[in-house]
Length: 335
Ligand code: HEM
Ligand SMILES: *[C@@H]1O[C@H](CO)[C@@H](O)[C@H](O)[C@H]1NC(C)=O
Ligand SMILES: *[C@@H]1O[C@H](CO)[C@@H](O)[C@H](O)[C@H]1NC(C)=O
Ligand SMILES: *[C@@H]1O[C@H](CO)[C@@H](O)[C@H](O)[C@H]1NC(C)=O
Image 1 (tube, rainbow, N blue to C red):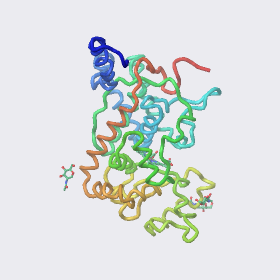
Image 2 (image 1 turned 90 degrees about the vertical axis):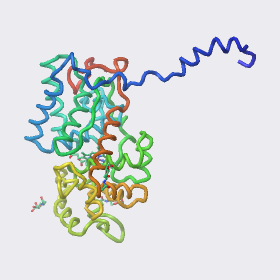
Image 3 (image 1 turned 60 degrees about the horizontal axis):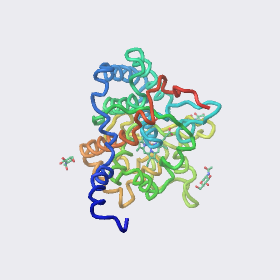
């Protein structure tokens, strides 16, 4: 290259320019009306299935929102979390962190898939169903609407071992949580907005039992907990070691409603998980907790944007994905 003539450089220039253009962003292959011709009933069918399920089983919404987030953070939004394990492969859903995901969440996606396969076989991906169902359920329980573009393909791999390190746990420090989200391209503010999803749903006692029974050498109970709330939780969780199904609402005030109560709770010591409460104390996250506690509109706007962003995580295309016939199985059985 040292001796390359100006002419050669000139000739190369167009190639260099072309080569340096970014590949067409995957998002441009997605569109709002992706199924307009191939499955015009897509939105209506998903809507019917989730409405019926949510009315019968109100815990569905939270389950699907968590399922969606956990799917997107591991291998992208490709429904790899819906795959069942078999004797050859332990799949994502059997990683410890995913095991408590409620059966109702998987069930509603399977139902929507079945209905869609009857209407337009082999057309709609499980990942599009999951992204759409999560958005629709957020809206159904009172949260903000956001756009979900369509055309995701379903992933071709799902390994429990891929989950490690991609999802936060309640025992992580705020520093660790910020780093994890930052490594996925989220700002601190986007992270705080996303965790606002804890305005709905449950957590099992083991996720916060240390805060009740085993906090520190000097205090069994986390002093950051509102004392009355702590007493209620201790009672609720008294048998949690023998009955691991015991669980508490993430938002004790308005458990089934998507609102900004989660943030208002944090300011009163009513955060359930240690990581929830810590958001209200760390100097980097506290300003956003205060903002969202005071201004639900701001929370809804930021949550919607961050969820829309999440729904575009590492989208698969025909090259590295397909449309599964069943959401819990790959089309080709691999060994
Ligand atoms: C600091 C980061 C986060 C931590 C440490 C965390 C941890 C947890 C834990 C331990 C549970 C209880 C699971 C169970 O016992 O069944 C839970 C529930 C839940 N999480 Fe998170 N989470 C985080 C961020 C998020 C984000 C970003 C979302 C979605 C955008 C989300 C949505 C949910 C929902 C909806 C539930 C309730 C699930 C249900 O009722 O079935 N979480 N989370
Ligand atoms: C109590 O907390 C300590 C330190 O976090 C932990 O190592 C231990 O396993 C906990 N004990 C129980 C019974 O959960
Ligand atoms: C815990 O177990 C005891 C003894 O079986 C029972 O009396 C009590 O009601 C249980 N508590 C909860 C919250 O289920
Ligand atoms: C609340 O947030 C919205 C959206 O960011 C903003 O337009 C509005 O001015 C805020 N309201 C108050 C009272 O600050």
